[in-house]
Amino acid sequence: MPEQPRPHPAAEPVLSVRDLAVSFRTADAWRPVVNNVSFDIGPRETVAIVGESGSGKSVTSLAIMRLLAKGSARIEGEVLLNGRNLLALSEERMRDVRGNDIAMIFQEPMTSLNPTFTIGRQIAETLLRHRRMSATQAKAESIELLEKVRIPNARGRIKDYPHQFSGGMRQRVMIAMALASKPQLLIADEPTTALDVTIQGQILDLIKTLQEEEDMSVLFITHDMGVVAEIAERTLVMYRGDVVESGPTEDIFHRGRQPYTRALIEAVP
Ligand code: ADP
Ligand code: MG
Image (cartoon, rainbow, N blue to C red; front, top):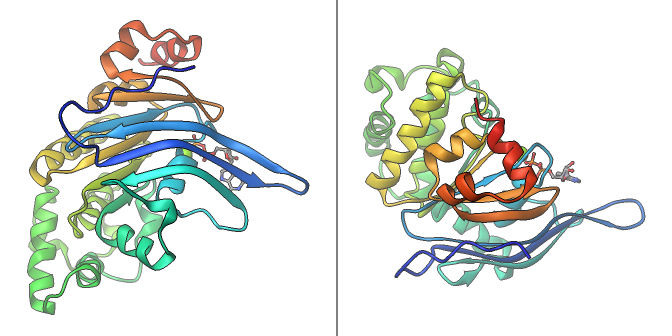
């Protein structure tokens, strides 16, 4: 049995995933792609899931958010947010959770942004969806959010369209939109994978800073062990749907036992 991470000391976990398993429907059977994943994330803590492409990282995060189509995916186990099992909520209540409690960012910000609306409008709409405020307030707060994610000249840039931003700046915009609902938990699925190394470092620094400023917990998904070392206090290593190793990130680096973990570490430049 793989060792499970220790619960965060002296604090109730924000997220507690228990024996999560996901299978997808095929022509004649259910194909398991995630098996018995268990971990906790404490307040203001970052936990990473690392593993090669296809190991089940994204499916795990989509299952937590209940974003897998019901007819084609079967989810088992428990996903407790502040002790409340998300897998047992009605679809309507789950929408509230997605809107208010957990935010998600992905690898390709362009796919989540509307190319025909200005950034200011998209952030304002996100704000208005979550909170009662006037259009003027929403505009002012959009600028504040862009400043919070360190976009230079935020006031001027709200009139720009997504394609006028670089990849790194677009990811900052996505983070600003994620912060709009003041989430307790941010799930970041390969948010720096499409960015070059310098920008990658800046986004990781930003996430770390915001996590403290905003009092957020983070589930950080990546295939890159180098990124894990930068960002996560604890790490789970997934391989073909299983958690093969987990614990404090330092221990994984120094005492990681699984050959797969060693291979991941050796792949770090
Ligand atoms: P990664 O670790 O790269 O994020 P994924 O979680 O995306 O891996 O995928 C894990 C496995 O599940 C892969 O074999 C993938 O092909 C399969 N898979 C992902 N999404 C679906 C889906 N909607 N239907 C069927 N199979 C899927
Ligand atoms: Mg993925």
